[in-house]
Length: 318
Image (cartoon, rainbow, N blue to C red):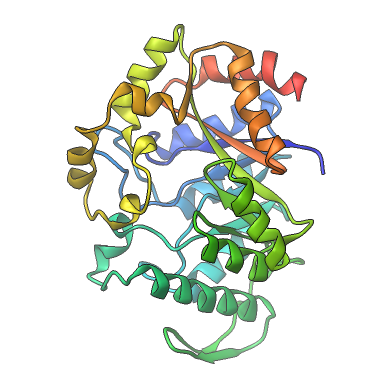
């Protein structure tokens, strides 16, 4: 399977109209697919945005012609019931004429606590995701369906607007047990680092031959220093490793942790500057780890320099 390069529509940094324009520009630049983040809040107040993802997906589907569009990722378990996600994803697949894929994950407290629901522990969240995937596929079969499970009830629900083919489900994983779930139930894996061991666990659980998506954060700027400063200001969460990112409840909590993040920390997880070789090497690292797709997130409001660099120097060399 040839490596495909995708573009991240960052809902945390751009208003909905800008996201649609960015999607069109990325398609023109030659990217093969788009991912869009699904948050109720941005990570930090400085990022400044968080539009409702399903409205934006509809607009992007209408404004684009070729690129595939996927959520990167949706949490179908707490803030929104999986039956509603099943309907939203089915409509997105219809509107995009078969170009949509549904990325799902266990979510973050930052977004999921807003309705007052309890924030479960990691193992329970994974259990809920498994049941949610079962409901998605059940409702996409068509007809009236009911489900009485441990975490969810669906009673005599029917999705009338169904696509010819249901959207593929890509499952996000950062830990071995989530990678096992992705391999067993998902159509693809999504993760945020070129982790060969994680990919191997996905394949052993049933993911052999299925797509593997990895995200790459970059900060294209006139200099590496300028890029790093922008990344530190706008995307310090790139350097917040481990489970911390799932357990903080407000943007203020993230900003408090961001005070501890230094430029060197960000430099380890963000490719900065405009040297094409540095960007190509980061993409090749995913390729060497067995990944088939990389989706790139340009940090900051201005996307023009990034799109020019990738159209001229990166995409032609993949």
